[in-house]
Image 1 (spheres, rainbow, N blue to C red):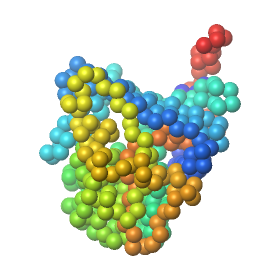
Image 2: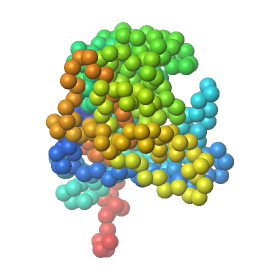
Image 3: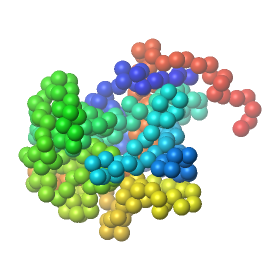
Image 4: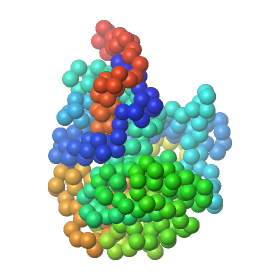
Length: 358
């Protein structure tokens, strides 16, 4: 069994391969050849009055690759206001000011635990990669310009994913902090060799964009109706970033999954946590939009539902919830890559198997 770190994962994976693996996994899922177990959260008190302990699990099996993944997080979460807007923030309060998140990858042939790996680098890459898969089917094929709102952890993976599926030439990025937007613009100009510009407003970021991305931790809408242009493809990384009026105004909307997160909260928590108002656990438009009737990405990739039909359509990928299957797809690349490159720390399998019938 291998223990694989974030540093190892970063050496192993690249965005084009991740997009390809995710697309194949989505196609199998759409054809009922893969299995998904939806996300479940347990929410209880924390000694910090402004925070909670959130324990999250999600899993999926991808028979084609012979693996099943279980992703779990043990987070201390708070919702501070930043520039007058509530944000979802995980606190690094474990020993050494660190976070807790990991993926366990099992063999479907033997049931054995093959490896564990940190979920941090994988997390942003699978979100970006899934957005890239969606853009392949929903954005105009000649898309050249990205408008990006946000400059944090998730933003870079969104840029790389769009460049993996489209011949992107220009990035227009806005973030409330000027230093941050300049940094991400300079970083990806050097990394991807595209023209980048840091702009002073969301309007400037969206103007002339073929693909408009929101990649923030905001608990309130970021992509507003006035930013939408004909033929644009819009996408997000959180359920709270695209408001109802934008969603219902789209010509074609696709969701990552229509299955809601199951939140098991201790007494009093729903009334105290912003997530139950506009976030992972609920949205104010749940009664306006019946997400169970909105096409899922797996069905688009499998060819059961149409993608973009014309250049004038305004399309959207609403990353409403994540999938455990995404970690199975990523895990298949990470495990094989670790073996091929001699990465990871090997641990005796006897510590993870037993000779007593469970």
